[in-house]
Length: 390
Image 1 (spheres, rainbow, N blue to C red):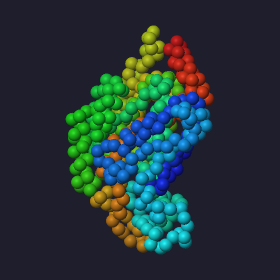
Image 2 (cartoon, rainbow, N blue to C red):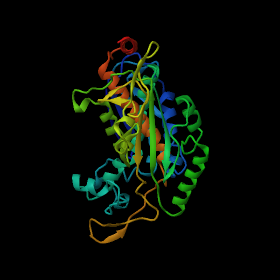
Image 3 (cartoon, one colour):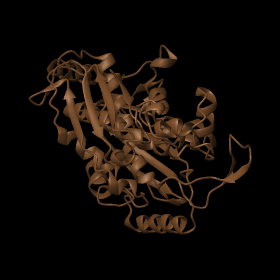
Image 4 (cartoon, rainbow, N blue to C red):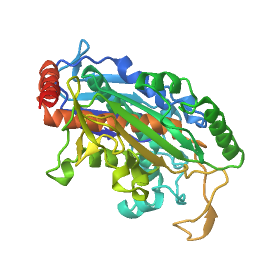
């Protein structure tokens, strides 16, 4: 299973094409729109979220509410496109009036892809870089993830996320009793934090950063429950599921680190306090007494909840901007400002949740029968029964 995205931040639309879904899986617009709405929320978001009201259009691969087994194409229109039709149009420049060619960018912003992308592709107008490198692209990554989440939920696998740190303000990530409780509480939190007292401190940190013309980052956590054991591989490096998830997390705009279970804390503990003892019961079969390794051993799922965290750096667009150099004049300048958030960590948690869901669903589709959805469900249940009785 795979997908490809296309589109620019201020272009007419964002598009994703998903290939490899089983035939006969139920999916409707609302399954995707709910995730798109979640991505747009969060204390600290900028004005772009007031402009865009993301809604998906399913334009192929689904008929009467069920997948066909053929590629599924999803489109999300950019409402702001109407203000950028001449700036971002596809017509050759010679067919446009000079005054219609606006906002040429020759000044790279620190922390963005502007300069590196210009060097790679030879763009003298760095708008050609920033329009695609923008986090706006995560809209259709969430759309693809929403389809994956629907698939997983129908297989008894649930995915959730929450924010455990913003700007140095930390929450206790172990206080929730169930994934349902975690969802219920965090969906009603403007920073997606489970602890209401910590939520207020996080909001204060965001407001302070905004007042200072600055930005702050944080840490998000994704939990996956209901996974069968043995998904992934120890045989080849590129088939290890935890490695694929780690790559997906770091591929999200502004993410700079990832850990599973106790993560980097394992470097400071002896092995007896890191590894998870194995036990067995008639009801469950094999299980781990703890989950310090976050649901993975040897690149494969253990059947325990998958727990993965991602570190998001502060957004580099600052209202108190840093210094840079104009690529035409080579003169120093103060970086330009595009619309930006002071903190996008709550929204990034939703993005992380959906990219993890995609990797989980993709691994399941690779490992189990996947042409028909009913056959996939039977295959997954057979694996669960096999592991329990092994």
